[in-house]
Length: 310
Picture: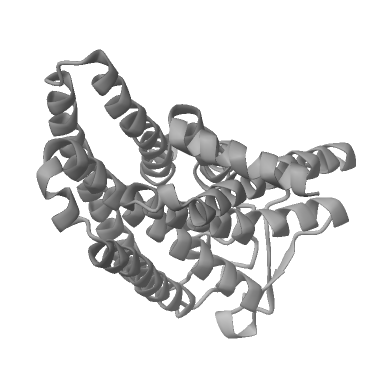
């Protein structure tokens, strides 16, 4: 038995038992990481360099790409290191930093996805007020609010989680430091305080999801009233990628944290954590670029420009 003050490191869940499978997981995570870095990096560069993309929608997409990069760089490199060197260790301070950054970027991502939904709602349902409601100052304030709220939210969870006495060992049933796994190590009733925070978090998630669903009902009603087929196609091309990203992120997150204990298992928990923490940052650039012609053109111009330059 030990308490949190005597824990110098945690043991993360190994991704595989055999050396061959460990190397396979390393290669898979390496490919996903490179895809996420390339895709999100291209979006950031294209939006930053393309003056015609300096609009609210692409400004928020740039912020989303930054949060995606932060999210995948928080968890995947350590998992790759452990798989390559056949180890499970993560230092106590490293676990604190990893949990803080992971919750921070996940919270920012949810806030940005909600703001992007509001952007689409105003653009399609209230186009005459778009410049007023989503001016440059308003966009900057909303983005700053997303990052600031994510920081405060993450700080609250991190301080509360690691203030608990931990006396059930130091082995975590996840490949990164996750709040539910650390709570399992607690030997104090004060863990109920963190469970209360998680319940509030779930309510906030449901609130954001309800706002997104309500907004898209209004959006689709407005789109279906557009007389021209070309106009409807353009409206759908800007909304469907966002809806796909929200559905993937919210559905996997909710199922990961609200699934019944009767269906819980180590392999299922691992698969779900990969689905909501690793897959979306890698797929988001592909989802957005496939449907948005302006973004595809800007990325292509950027890539060809680099090619002819070098």
